[in-house]
Amino acid sequence: MENKIKQLRKGVFELAILGALEDRQHYGYSLIKTITDGVPVSINEGTLYPLLSRLAKEGLVQSQWVESSLGPPRKYYSLTLKGKETLSALGVEFDNLVAMIHQVRDAVASGDESRQQKQISVKKGESDEASLS
Image (tube, rainbow, N blue to C red; front, side, top):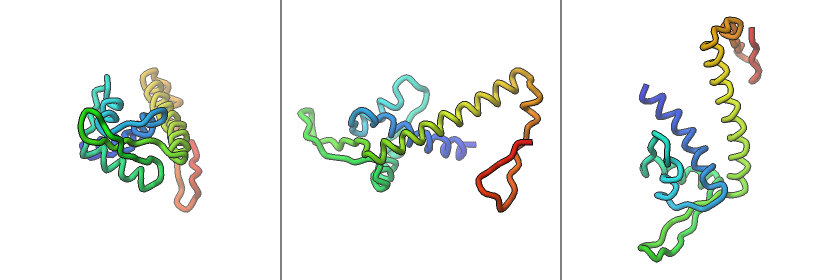
C-alpha cells in the first residue's frame, strides 16, 4: 500500500509544483511551504529537488540563482512556456480524474446500481478507446 501512495503522490506533487510556479518564482523551501500549507500532506527536500531537476530536464521549469540579503544565494524556479502549457493540460486531466472519482463515490453512496453495474472493457490491440457495458 505504501508504494501505491508514493506513486500517487509523485504525480500529484509534480502538478502541485507546476501550479505553485504558475504566477511566481519560488526557491525550494518557499515551494514546500506553498504546496503543503494547510494540508495534511508533507513533501521533503529529498522528493522536491529530484522532481525539480526532472522538470528542468524536460524544459518545464527553469532556475536562476538570486542573491539574498538574509544569507547565501537562493536558487529560484519558474515555469517556462512549455511548463505553462503542460500545467494547463495536466490540470484539465486532473480535474477530469477527480470528477470521475467523485462520480463513482456518489454512485456507491446513493446505491445507484445502474452506475455500479457498468464495466469498462478494453480489448487487446485496440487503440486507447474503451467501451462501457
